[in-house]
Amino acid sequence: MNKLIDILAQNSTDAWTSALIAVVGAMLVLLLLRWLILVRLRRVANTTVTLVDDFLVEVVSATRVLLPLAVGLYAGTHFLTLPDAAEKFADRAFGVMMVLQIGFWSSRGLNFWLRMRFDKGDVAEAGSRAMTHTLLSFLGRMVLWALVLLLILDNLGFNVTALVASLGIGGVAVALAVQNILGDLFASLSIAIDKPFVIGDFIIVDELTGTVEHVGLKTTRVRALSGEQIIFSNNDLLSSRIRNYKRMRERRAVFGIGVTYDTPAEQLEALPGLIREAIDAQAEVRFDRAHFKSFGPSSLDFEAVYYVLQPDYTVYMDVQQAINLQLVRTLAARNIEFAFPTQTLHVSGAMQLARQTTP
Image 1 (tube, rainbow, N blue to C red):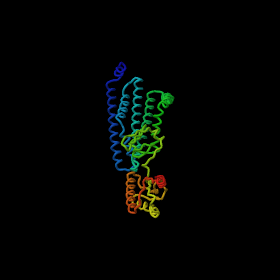
Image 2 (image 1 turned 90 degrees about the vertical axis):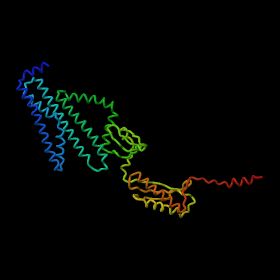
Image 3 (image 1 turned 120 degrees about the vertical axis):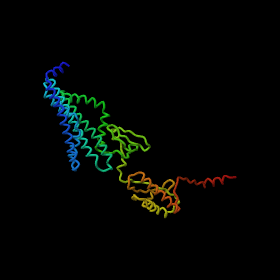
Image 4 (image 1 turned 180 degrees about the vertical axis):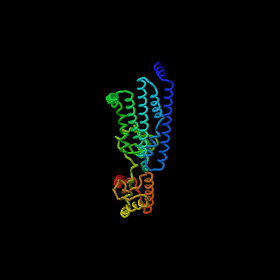
C-alpha cells in the first residue's frame, strides 16, 4: 500500500492524465484498426477464391481485447515515473498478454487449417474426416498451449530449462503410472491416421458387432445391433481382429440345398442350371457357380455362390429370399423334393426269424 502511495505521489496530475489518455487512446485506435481490417478483409474474401484472405479473417477475428489493453497499459507506463520493480512487472505483464494473444491467433489459424483440410471432400468419408479433425485439433491445441505456458513462465523469470528437465524425470514416473491411458491416447492417434474404421462403419470385433458412433481419446463407442452401446478401450480395440463391413464393395454369398436320394439323374443334372436361373433373375447380383457338391447322410447336396453388388446386408437378405422362393416354386413344378433328415430301417431279416420261431 505504501509503494502505491509513493507511486501516486511521484507523478503529477498531468502525468496521470497523459497516461490515462494514452491507455484509452491506444485501446480505441487498436479496436478501430481491428474493425477496419476485418471489414476490408471480409470484403476481399467475398470476391476471391483464395483461402489466404479467409485465413487472415479468421486470425484477425481472434484478436481479444487483451491486445489493445496490453498495448494501452504499456504505453501509459511511459508517461509515469515508476520504480524499477514496477517497470519490470509492467514489462512482464505486457509480454504475458502478448504471448496469450499470439496463442489465440495460432489456435484460430490451426483450427481454420484443419477445417479446410478435413471438412471438405467425399460425403462417404465424412465420418473419417470428422474423427481425424477432432483428434488432431485436440492434440494440436494441447501442444500449442503447452508452448504458450512455457513462454509465459520464461517471461515471468522461471528457469524453463530446469523445469523441462525436472518434468522429463518426473514424466517417466507419470508415464509408468498412466501407461494404459497413454496407450489408449496413442491408439486413438493411430486410429485417426491409419483409419481402420471411422464413425458410421459397421464392424465386428471378436464376437461383438455394431456401428461405430464415437472415437475418443481413450475409448471407442459402438452401437450394437440389439441397441446397447459397447465401449472399447482404444488400445484393446486395435489389439483385436476387426472386420469392417462398411469397406465391402460387394458381398459374397454361399448357400446350399439338398434334394432326396430318389431324384432322377436327369433332374440332378438340370438342377445347377435351375439355381443359376434363380440367381440371374435378381437385380444387382453376379452369378459365380453352382455344383452338385456331395452325398449327404440324407440328401444330395448342391452348393451355389454368387455376389451381391452392394455391401448392404438388407439388400443381400432380400436377394437371398427371392432366390429361395423361386427355387421352391421351380422344384415343386418339376416334382423335385427337398430333403430333410430321415432314417430308413430294413427289418426283413427280423421278420423271417420271427416266422421261424412261431409255433
